[in-house]
Length: 299
Image 1 (spheres, helix red, strand yellow):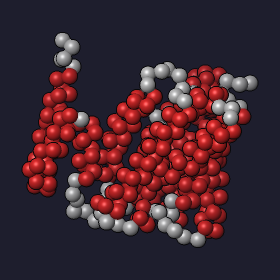
Image 2 (tube, one colour):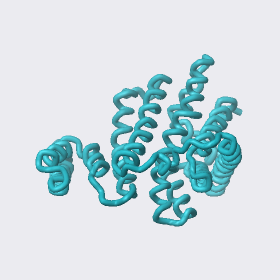
Image 3 (cartoon, helix red, strand yellow):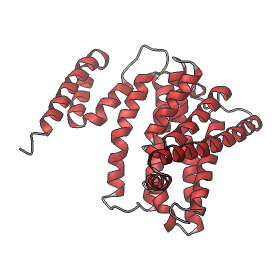
């Protein structure tokens, strides 16, 4: 009886392996196709999206297929990596574990995007929004975007509490938001951080590492793919919804979505990811400082 629930999964992997073999054989030859089919049988959740990612394409640039493949891969790989690093403890993982996971995740975001642009489609990194331009105008653009990002995030939080409060009562809504925030390993870790070096390390993590990786993936790669098919407003909205959904914070959906919209427009109007990276980092550090000064649950 214990093996019955695994039968549909095994059959699905078998069918998927056969499909990949048939698709890959004319593209990669029989040995390559057999290797990918075997990998799919062993680890379909990881191998199948990777195959979709490297699968030769006749298109001139990347599209939604690569975004879907990377999303499926990260959806399997990141929780798996977290379980390996974080263990089964119910408390917050220590700072070195959180930092290691964040660095690995954002390196993967950046590496995957660069692979797609430079290796698969042989395009310049400027197509991804990674351009070297004079810093003075970029800093001015970043300052404006940072103000809009912090304001949008604050507005989103306020509206979320008001809407939830009208539905379930203000006290219950506040409690729900607090509990949702405390699910974040970073926020659960804050009360235990007292050394200056630890606080600086966390600041670098949320203010530098995370913004760089997320801007490359969510704005450079994802918004870039949507923008070529849609007008800027719809592309900004859809990419922001994807960005918010990826954070898995139900009560944070609106604030994160508004942040994503600001960052998408920033990229669209400047043509560079640099101002958005800076604005994203300022927003994260502002939220971290606010949380650190007044943790949820304090009077």
